[in-house]
Each structure stands twice: as C-alpha cells, then as structure tokens.
Amino acid sequence: MSEDLDRTRPVWRQVAAVITARIAEGVYPVGGKVPSVVELSTEFGIAASTAQKALTHLKAEGLIRTEVGLGSFVADGVS
Image (cartoon, rainbow, N blue to C red; front, top):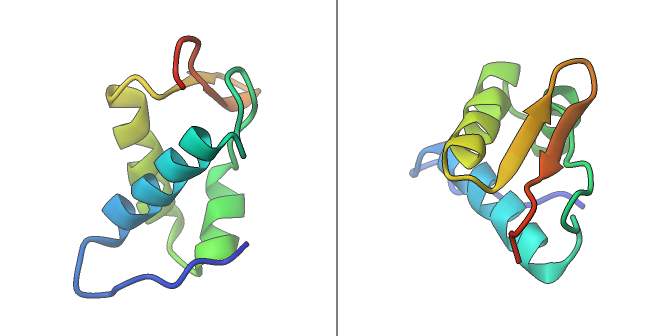
C-alpha cells in the first residue's frame, strides 16, 4: 500500500495524513496496531526519523497511543 508523496510539503505531515485517513477508513481500527517506524520507512521510502516524527505528531494529537516494546495503536475513542 504505497502512497505517492509530494516532496514540496513536509513528508512527515503527509505520512501522518495518510495514517489518519487509514484510521478514518477503518484500515487501522480502534485498538489496532499501526505500522512501526521501520514498516513506515519501508512503505514510503523515507528515513526512520521522518516516520518517527509522523507517529509522534499523531500521538500528540491523541490519535494513537504507544506501548513500550509493543508498538503504536489506534487510541480508544477515535473514529
């Protein structure tokens, strides 16, 4: 499921937007695991730090939660 990214806009924002859309579409259901930094890096062809920034943004927005050693999950109450 690769996405074309517009390299004129911050890539981390675009990746965060794709993940947000997938959550809204039910691709990643509430409580479901979202891709790891490594998986996102591979899928989008981006640096791990860029993928991490996207996940950090989504966590700050309350869309995902992280569990050390387990990964990131769609936060409860998100639809």
